[in-house]
Image (cartoon, rainbow, N blue to C red):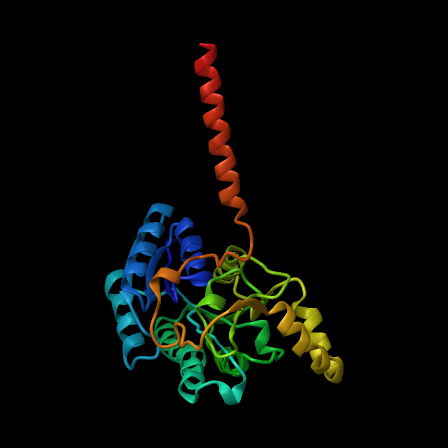
Amino acid sequence: MTRTVVVTGATSGIGRAAAREFAGRGDRLVLAARAPETLDQVRRECADAGAADVRAVPTDVTEPDALDALAATAVAEFGRVDVWVHTAAVMAYGRFEETPAEVFEQVVRTDLLGSAGVARVALRHFKQAGAGTLILTGSVLGHITAPYMSGYVTSKWGLHGLVRALQQESRDLPGVDICLVTPGSVDTPVYQQAANYLGRIGRPPLPITTPERVARAIAHCADRPRREISVGRINLVMRVGFTALPAVYDVLVGPLMRLGGLTGRPVPPTEGVVFTPHPAGEAVRGGWLPDLSRAVRTVGGATAAVGSAVRRRLS
């Protein structure tokens, strides 16, 4: 059966990779994000990738009634919502007291309250329909902490608590599933797009996974719902260290963050995309890992060209 999948945060990183993943499975898609131009570009990508049908709905998850309007569009176009994938998030670097209060609050408003708004609307529709899967994107930083990212950490801890409470409340709703996908470091543009009051551009600390791998975990949840899926080779190690050896963890996390979580590239104080999207910076990958699939395509194209030239010379 062809599903109707709503993806919020569809223009960049994990959300864009997830949209492509579901498109490749032949699902119907309703794509939502703040930047209309990029959203239309992703719509075309998904249509080319094999989606049964695609609609693009510019949406800011922090705006009143925006999510109700998004759900209404999905139902009007396709009759129902089977899966809702929420990936929209923003980030800010800076010491807590040096990060403007309005920036901190907007990060929490987007990452936590936006997720709560999605859950409220999606679960209302799923309850009426008697079925549906809600997939929210958490972070390993919802289980541990790191300095200089207080707004993001606060939001992800809150989101993990919200998901656990919703899973408990939905036990009497057969057919309705709530899943949490928890990635570690992922090669997305969120680090360059973040607000920054540290003076150094952030980066994902090693080891880094790909957004496509996280997208596959999301699609797996849609096929076979699970309470939580962790994506990241050392997520469990970090969680154990944070819980079992808190004093040691706190001594090490600051130097490790400065060494592995920040680049040496300077950046002036900036709000990043916390309040306004930056379409030119939106992409699936952030450039922190080599794009092996592109490299294979390039090598394959070059090999084919050389082979063609050789055949012409021999003929």
